[in-house]
Image (cartoon, rainbow, N blue to C red; front, side, top):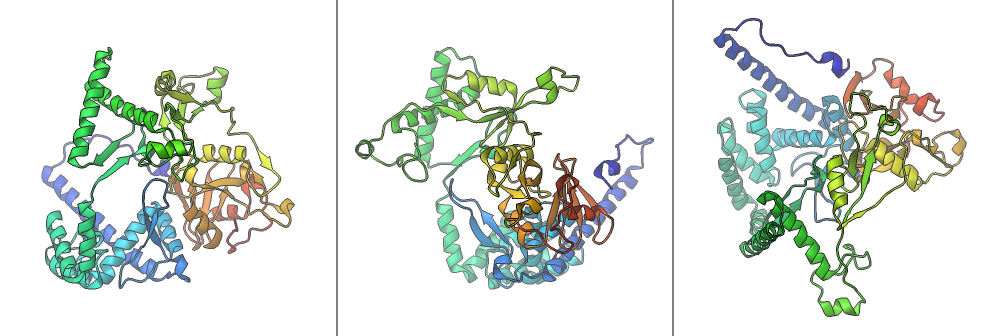
Length: 499
C-alpha cells in the first residue's frame, strides 16, 4: 500500500474528551511504542546473528570523517566480544525498517552491544523496564571500551539505567577506562587536550545560500579573529553599508579569506593535494618555485533548473517558472535572488555551462561513461538511488542497471541515459556482489529487491514504498526486465547482477 493511501488528515475532536482518559490513552500508546522498539532491537539481533559474513571483508563497518580531501577512516562496527555482521544483512534490515543503511548500522551496533556486552541492562530492556533510547545511549558510550570495561559499566548502570543522567554515565565510562583501559583513557585525554577544530558545513547550505560555520579556537586566535572581524564590519559601515551588524561580520570573515589568498596566492593544482604551496611555505620558497600571487575570486558552479513551462513561458499558477539554482560542490539549492547577488559581486567568477536537457536520451558505444552523459545522470538523480541513501552525486558512480556485456554489447546493458543510475560505493558493492537487484521503471522510480525477496520502490522524489513481502506479489517480476520494459537476457531470478 502506498504512503499516500495510509495518510489520515488530523481533525479537531468532535467533543472534549475526559482529561484523565486522554492521559491514560497517551500513556498506553507510549508503552506500546516502547514495546515495539524493544521488539525491533530483539529482531535486529536475531537477524544479524543469522547472517554472519562469509568473508572478513564482508563485515559491516562504519566510517568517521577526516581532514578535507582525505579518505574517511574505517572502524569495525562491533566491539570486543561481539560477532561480526554481514553488511548486506544490515542494508536489507534497513529496507525492511524503511530507514537508511546508516541508521540500520547504528541500530545493529547498539543492539549487539546490549545483547553481548551489557547483559544485565539488556535483560531489563527486554523486560520493558528501561526505555530503548536510554539503553542505546549506554551502548554507544561503552562500545569503545574493552569487554572488562563494558562489564564494569553494565554492573553499575543496569540497576539505575531508567534514571541515569548523561554526566553520571560519562563518569562511569571514565572510571571504567581508568580501571580497565588505561591506553584508551590516555588517548581520550589527548584528544580532549587538542579539541580545537573548525567546521564549515558546505553540504548543509540552505536555500538562501547561507552556510553554517562553527569551531573551537585557542583564546589568542579567537581574540585576533574577533578583532579582525569587528574591524571589517566597522569598515563596511564607514563605507556606507546599512546591513545589520551580523551580516557585516559574516561578510568581513569572507573578506579575510580572500585577503589571505591575495597575500599567499590561490592554489593552482601544481603542489600537492591542496593545489598551491603550503600555508607555512615562506615567500622565498614561493618565489623559487616560480609561484605568483593573484587576486582571489569567489568561484561558485551553479546549475539553473528550469521546467518546460519556464522555457516556453507557460508558467501557470504553480510557480513552475521560478528558476532554482543548485551549487555544484554541495548539491544544495539556492534561490534566484541569491544567484543574482552572487553574480553581481565583481569578485565572483561566473561559469556558464551549455544547456543540458535531463530528458534527452544520450548513448555511448563503449563501457566508459562520457563526461556529458555522466553529468546528465548526476544532475538527474542527484543522490544515490538506494532507498534511504542521500549520498551526493559527486561521491557516487554511474552504474549500469543492466550489466554491460563486454563480449557482446548488443545483448544488453548499454551505456545510455535509461540504463545508468547513481550508486554510492557501498550500495554499488551490495548490488554487484551481495544479491541486491534493481531496475529503473518508466516513471523514473527505482525498484529494488533484497536478497530475501523484500521489494521496495524508491520514487523520483525520494519517498519509499514497500511493495511486497518476501515471496509475494508480482512487482519483483519487473526486476527480470531492463529499464523501460526491454527484456534483459541476462537477468535471472536468484542471480545477482554484475557491474
